[in-house]
Amino acid sequence: AQSVTQPDIHITVSEGASLELRCNYSYGATPYLFWYVQSPGQGLQLLLKYFSGDTLVQGIKGFEAEFKRSQSSFNLRKPSVHWSDAAEYFCAVGPKAAGNKLTFGGGTRVLVKP
Amino acid sequence: DAGVTQSPTHLIKTRGQQVTLRCSPKSGHDTVSWYQQALGQGPQFIFQYYEEEERQRGNFPDRFSGHQFPNYSSELNVNALLLGDSALYLCASGLAGGETQYFGPGTRLLVL
Image (cartoon, rainbow over all chains, first blue to last red; front, side):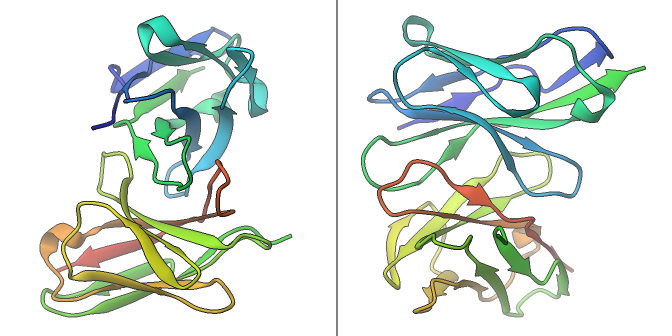
């Protein structure tokens, strides 16, 4: 069965500092990988996705993520965080076959200090 | 272009009651999936609808049912509500065979 682990429940980072959020997955085959962001009381916004090809993918809001097959990881990074990046971030995996069932990690809450 | 919309935004029910949540997919999308997000947790897949049929189902009891209409909009019904059904219910739409889902703002359900 597929699963997603986000080891860090909370991360506090100073504004302007770099941010890295970890994501490890367990899946029977190479999955599609996603990062979503959720602001308080809001739905999920897609930050970026990986399907195939270049293992470093760029997303919106200055985020990027790197797929490492050998480590079953898909970590999210941002070089310099802004106060507006305070939110909860979810990593998700989905099947390459038809169908859109996503399996989500438990999320990482990011707090940005001024 | 309107994104995924959901109604109502908030809902309060009591145990044993029934509830219906509604979702309109993003223009051009033909699949609708429903997710339950309990407080402090990641979303969990309930089921997906395509061509007015349930195509996939997660580990949820039969109290959770749904429907998709010819215009691709969808309803989620929950019968015999339990306190544990309190959660944010998210609707996501996409294209059949596509890879990406787009989420609505959710309906927050509180069961008292």
